[in-house]
Image (spheres, rainbow, N blue to C red):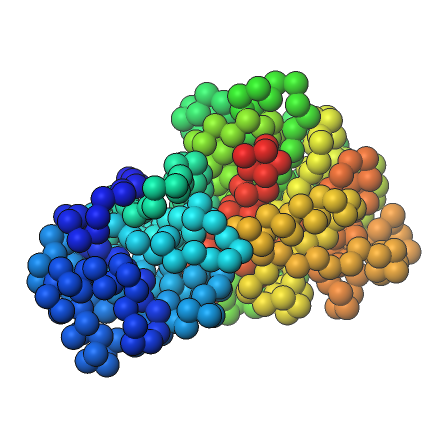
Length: 496
């Protein structure tokens, strides 16, 4: 989709759909008053009819409005003016996207940026609208052979009507790139496990490197990982016929050749049946989403490469399946990680941390400025935070606060949990350096405590996205999170 800006008078602008925000109340805004006069009072009469009140998220579509060159006029309710805030704008953006894409309009012009928010600028508002459009127009029909009943929207271009002193060009570039990253993340995540295997992910990394010359890709196979001593990671893949892969994607933006990298480590479990500690059958199909952490790394690298962000980033994806087999991990087995630390496996369904711990040891070779791992790691995080915020833990408070700020700015929010020594005690083992689980209590925290044992030599943060990476039920599908959060963090870190 193409994005553009316009400063022409709205009453003289020809477009398939003109979008205007309306606050609750009888008084028309100056913009609406101008359009009402041009339409010989049609808009005012429509509002007086009572079918549309201006409540937040409410919409009304007027076809071929009298006296206006636009083919459609979409009125979007913004609620009470004194309650016009960030959450309300998010609701309005989603409603706008849904209503617009339900039409056959191929182009549209939006005036919502003329309603200023106290705590956000027009650039932020534009990005949120573009991301809302991206989510609303997303379809995953690739694997349907026929009768694709959910047709792609007709919209090809979307414009923002601006005042003379407003410039949002950078926001348009960033939002378009973030949308592309979100789409890649969703596409990879929504693929079934029989297609999206570790080898498939590796092939997609190679393809990304061919698409962007700023990304250099390398793939480690099981023999190479064995030479490095990645006993924890390889213990997970033993139960699968699909060989594990360690995927490395290095992005170097303009002027970043001498910079230490930000390293993103994404959990790449392309299917997780739980191993010998097998999961319940109900909902197990959703365990194809256990690689959403890795998909977010792909999506973030795609986004920053498209916007040519001046920063050095390395994406590392340890990828495997976790299935029951005669050679699979058994409860009570002890494995040796790349760091030399031994792990007693009390639950084979706590396998993500076994992949991550070896990857977190491996990334030391990049001399990272900081490391952020992203994983659908614990069901306990869903119990604690639901589906609204990702869990955040780490060993560097400044890094955690920067991620929190990026979450607030992007709308892809996180919530920090404690990483105290008292929780680490739950990982004690009578037979190894540590157990891979610490009991039912504080499961998200003890999982992070496990990872913290491998991250003592650099600044590190952990994102548990088990509750935010995908939706279940009628809206089942990947959300694309936390691509907006990670990209916003990197934008801020690059000073953009």
